[in-house]
Amino acid sequence: MSDEYELLQQRIRERAYELWEEAGSPEGEEQRFWHAARIDIDQQEAKLDKEVAASFPASDPPSSSVVTGATGESPATEALDETGAPVAKAKPAKRGAK
Figure 1 (cartoon, rainbow, N blue to C red):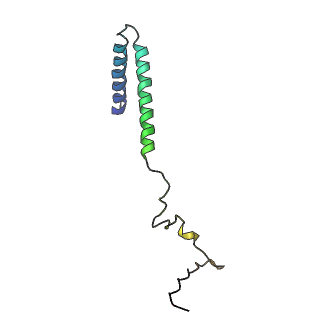
Figure 2 (figure 1 turned 180 degrees about the vertical axis):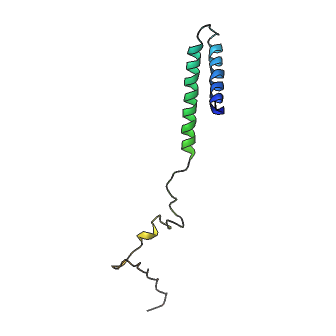
Figure 3 (figure 1 turned 135 degrees about the vertical axis):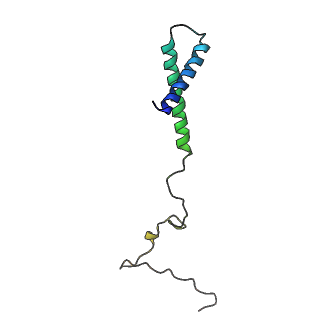
């Protein structure tokens, strides 16, 4: 059996023992404590999975990058003329020019 399985069984065993002791060490109820321990461990694992998933960054690209441009627009969305060629942006006029 895998180490992961053995580790899980050990965690359940230890938790079941804790629950059994907390209940006053009753005889003949091993299955009840094993089942309760298994539920506790499963809940702990689910909580941890959610925490880990929440810690991963969003898959959306940043709003400004070399790839997407300063405004988040794709370079493919630049203005095109009727032939499909990119339209050159007009340069600002120099001060004092008439």
